[in-house]
Image (cartoon, rainbow, N blue to C red; front, side):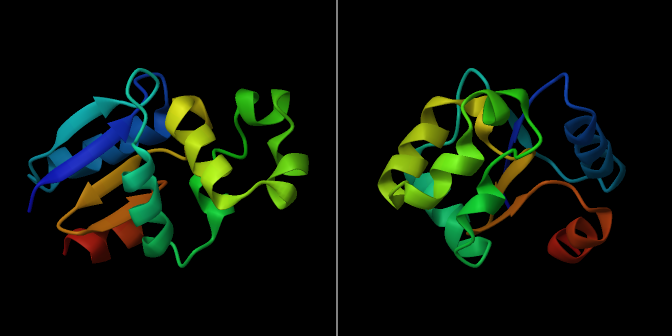
Length: 118
């Protein structure tokens, strides 16, 4: 299974996720999410993996999310607008953002990762 991990090096959750993958001896490729955010196609695919819950793609605890007041704007934003915004601002994307074998994960919860990669 080819594993692609969008991550931010200063993110402690991303570091935990990569440590988990290393411990499980799972090969992966990292992509710096700030410099190369996921594409709209990748975000669209991930949206399906999270049951269509657009808010789950956003880093709701992030500074950029608060500065841009996304929580207020999200309700009136079209899906296309939201995906375009995410694809342009890597810090808005919930991380780590993982695509693997036609499936995906956002965030890091060890039990979910064990089930996903098990």
